Image 1: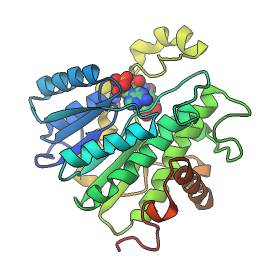
Image 2: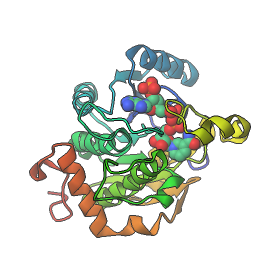
Image 3: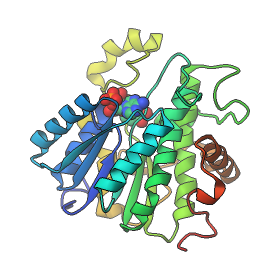
Image 4: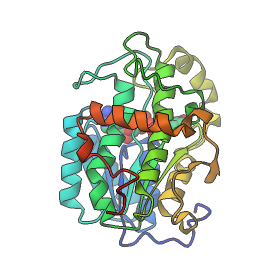
Length: 302
Ligand SMILES: NC(=O)c1ccc[n+]([C@@H]2O[C@H](COP(=O)([O-])OP(=O)(O)OC[C@H]3O[C@@H](n4cnc5c(N)ncnc54)[C@H](OP(=O)(O)O)[C@@H]3O)[C@@H](O)[C@H]2O)c1
């Protein structure tokens, strides 16, 4: 049992965990299902997603687990996923934006965008926007987004967000994880007073399939050596579960956590002008007209 969640019941709560077919997301889904929540998980492949949902039901003893298939590198699929979730869940208490990955080489999505930025940042940005009215109608509600300690090395390259001029997998990953933090800070500001909180976290270095699709050289060489010393997925899910469920963080918003404790994120992440610029660039890239984007700080609560 995770400290801070021992007396928590999530009975009657509905949670969506993106990327619940393996790794940290699956462990998060198991933990929240054990606390009694109805849990939706997502993955790219329907068969794998259904098999994961079966495991989560068996391991948690909770039958209320639903699987959704969507490739979140595609905005059409993110929109379809949101529609499916809105049809299935009359209320949504917690959204855990967990999907993310590392790709060594530059890939381009069906929307013509750089894959790391699209999956790690633009997908949670768009999904959150599409589910926000349902979260607002379910208050108190929480949005939990997975970043990484790599955010500390990140830089938002506004002149080359898509890595068209030069690409490095590590730079793209660092940028996307800093974007997760800046998105959360701006989102929390826009949601102030609404009853919906937004927090972001570093799960630790965790033994998962992370980076395995397109591994870096260091990944192939060193990972087998250090793998036994990494956190288990259960321990890696602890901060996600804590932020999704603990009473201690009721009303806490706009914070970066690691090991269930608030921590300082990179100095760049607190630049509010850059947060707003990133927000606007992201809204354009996902085709959200300014009038349709999430509430601004001026009109929250309206
Ligand atoms: N592991 C670590 O040490 C570590 C450290 C810091 C931060 N993180 C962050 O923690 C989060 C989870 O990482 P993890 O280690 O659990 O990764 P993982 O084991 O690779 O799991 C990734 C999950 O995301 C899903 N996924 C991947 N690409 C997708 C796409 N295009 N569309 C939809 N789903 C997709 C996968 O499902 P399918 O393959 O079934 O589609 C899987 O469920 C990520 O945001 C990562 O950046 C991890």
